[in-house]
Image (cartoon, rainbow, N blue to C red):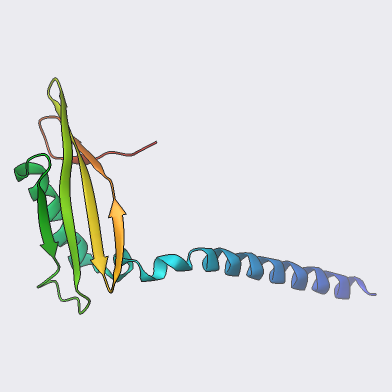
Length: 128
């Protein structure tokens, strides 16, 4: 077998392995295709962010606010229930835990973000 043939076989084998790995990875994430967030457009995201900030500022612990993407231009109806779970204060820092349920096309997604602020705007907290 010539050197050129061996190199070609190695490149072909490497390409097949890479293609299989990429396909497998995409297949493992396929369940995300039908989640409510996959139907959200940029205007939906901006609108729900405003609703979250309003809930953080105006809703008491244990209360919920509702959001619907009407008027965003998206043909898929998406709605959310934004519930304030609890609030903690430590000095000048206030943190609030939320429970957010997004719904679209018969699918729902549950999120549990935490936001904190210290004199300024609410900031989403990274979880470890």
